[in-house]
Amino acid sequence: MAHRGGDFFALAKRWFIDPSTLFFDIDRSIPFREGSHLGNLLIQSVRLSVSILIGYALFFLCRRTPKRIWLFILTLIGGPVVALVLPDVIFGGRRSSLARYWIPCYVGIQLSVAYLLATQVASPSFSKRTVWRALGAVLIMGGVVSCTINSQAEMWWNKGDGSAGLRAARIINQAAHPLLIIAAEDTYLGKTIALSRLLEPKVRLRLVVDPNMLRIPDGFTNVFLFRPSDRLRQKLEKEGHYKVEAVSLPAQLWRVVREPYPGA
Image 1 (cartoon, rainbow, N blue to C red):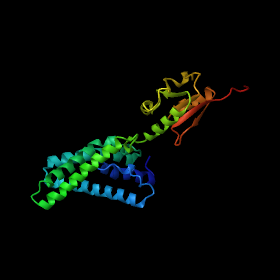
Image 2: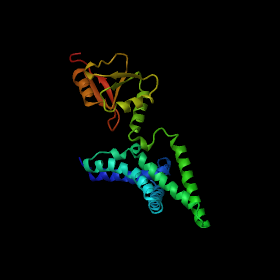
Image 3: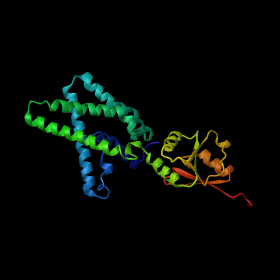
């Protein structure tokens, strides 16, 4: 299914914005960004400047290196475009929004910029050497600052929707006598397992291989499901005398509430 206009525009922005974060990735931590035209203008200016630098580095690479070299770099960059962007455009989806799939492309971009800087800082022209050395220092400093900031963050943008797991963990950790049910059949099993490392020792986990065999033990005040499959939710609601209700929006974390038996 093809993208709607708004979804496609948001996805396309990621294609052009994410490469700039290879050198400066601090905009999500700037306190004055939200609601500030000046902050947004500064961020967009930095992104545009880095994008121009990347474009010029690729142009310089193609003009100054043998074909076998620039073709190798362009293959690194173009591979993810063919493998991710084209399927998203033709069939729909968000494969190209996941930064981890773009690593070959990012390596190609960094090699291109590194070649440009290494060539220009050795220029016979003193003024050109000075400008490019200053630019190289700014890029290195931007990388150091970016790594320092995001290494201390609980969650970063390149983790996709991982922030949902962080919000869910906070809710579960605050609950009394919590139990988290993990369904082995769930397509989000990996995300649920990743969630477990954020949970406090008081939280108990129960792995369910077959939803039809699920039995919720007594002694737990709060029972949660994280991104459960429809099959698991329907089984609890129809056969187990439970009500399953969303705790967070969008619906990622669900709470299982025992309903009274008819006539009780």
